[in-house]
Image 1: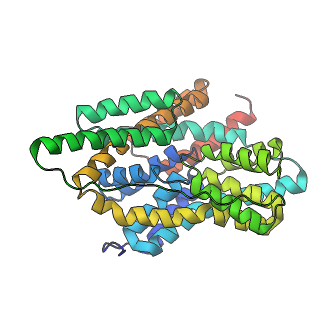
Image 2: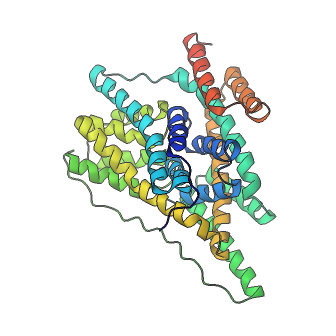
Image 3: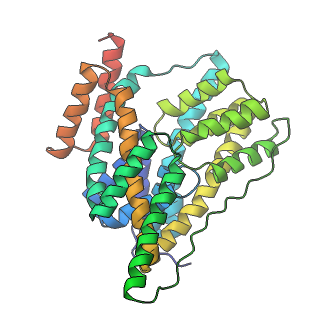
Length: 382
């Protein structure tokens, strides 16, 4: 498996993904919106259609999709070294911030929920997601069939259908239509088998030893499909209900820590690892839950270009891409309802759209400004 020929200095990757890791609030859809703006819009590292292919492929993988997207982009620029740098820089800020919150939580028995920071940062992230949906949607919905598929996927997600089922169904329908078209015109080519078989690892022992923590979080890194928010259900099932390692209250505090820090929500594992076994537990849980992503993202980066050479695989990916944009749109609706709750948040969200689209303001500065304004507004209860 050879790395791409096109290289980029590792320092450039380090600076970009470290900055994203420090400022990317709002969950996977917002993270991908930021990456699209930086990688396609500002730097021109790849075409928007290729970026969309990577988004669709990463959505099919277990684990944190936006973290895997960062790793795949790093691979596309500098091979395995780029993947490692991009992934580490995107993960470490969130993990270290969450670790600091875990230390404060254990030491002082409480956790500041930084409501003001989220109050101001999230409207900006909604605007970033909306812009990314517009840009990627123009590439994904090329043709009325894919546009119709996108609408169906959007409705299905809002109705509560699991995201992975929506992705696979959309890809499968597109693949079936491509097969029918090929049979009308020529003999069908051999299909590319895309089989995802995440193997469930054995359950952990009842005590939270380091080996037990390793296997529990490694299993989560392999079997959790969808966004980081899906992780919450798995954490409750394993750590609260089955193993009784933590209480529901502690789980809620850990999720809060993952929400109020930038970067991947999977950094919640760092908080939980610290609660279970201190510094060593935090390191083991973090490494275990993210390790599968490094391997899977490298596979996507290596195969993405070749998939487009197969008509059937490309058709499947077109269907997945349409569903991926629909998933982002559904997330934007849900996040918008929870975020745009008053005149201040609506004003901040609309102003962010104008500044992003018309004035081309750097999204990082908008996020920081929104977070600062949110803290001020929350402090004075405006």
